[in-house]
Length: 281
Ligand code: P6P
Image (tube, rainbow, N blue to C red; front, side):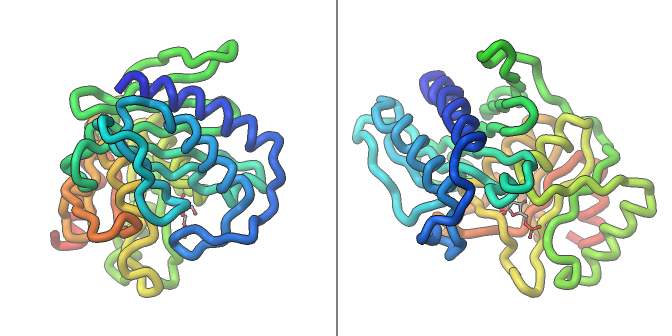
């Protein structure tokens, strides 16, 4: 597993360089969710694919930017599902973006996630790694190398409210719940980048990130294998919770298709309990 984490550190430097130097235009292709791809999306995907191509512990790769499973090695143990550059459309307005990695052993489902990692490309490059046996560990680049900063632990109750999705398409019960948090004094912190938005809530002590089922996207927007399940491990290991709109743990998701999405709620225990009450789940 350490071979994989060390490879992710090398990937982080390469993608950070690409972000700072690449052409921010659109390629003439679409990803498997039918979204237009930036040249940077394609370039980031290639960086990751090349980096893992000869790592002996890697069995296969599944990219959010492509259909299908790329077999790497029959003797490999882990399948890495990754979003090479989540929120990439924010690069051209100079906001933080990230890469997300879910490391699975066996069938691609929540219960088989053994570790997850994400990189934040912001004013500083930061990396967070969590396994099923550890709290999320925060690393920060200083003097051109990753330095361990420490464990991430969320408080029981936070102050931040990252409310995703188009508000005009929210269910009434969701709007009432989100408004109730603001009436309690929560502060809106939402950039449209899942990685920095979830990173901020974890590091600033807690709160709630929500991307619900909406009338225009009933199954939610965020992808189970590449985004939702990897962050669910992060939040649970940091002492928080991660559930869907039925109250099921996101780590119990079983995607029918690699690009399936799910409504998702990540937060401190207080906020998730309040959401369950509001949703009657
Ligand atoms: P919306 C970025 O496109 C992304 O996939 C996530 O990074 C982010 O949380 C979400 O979409 C933002 O979606 O609909 O709020 O703009």
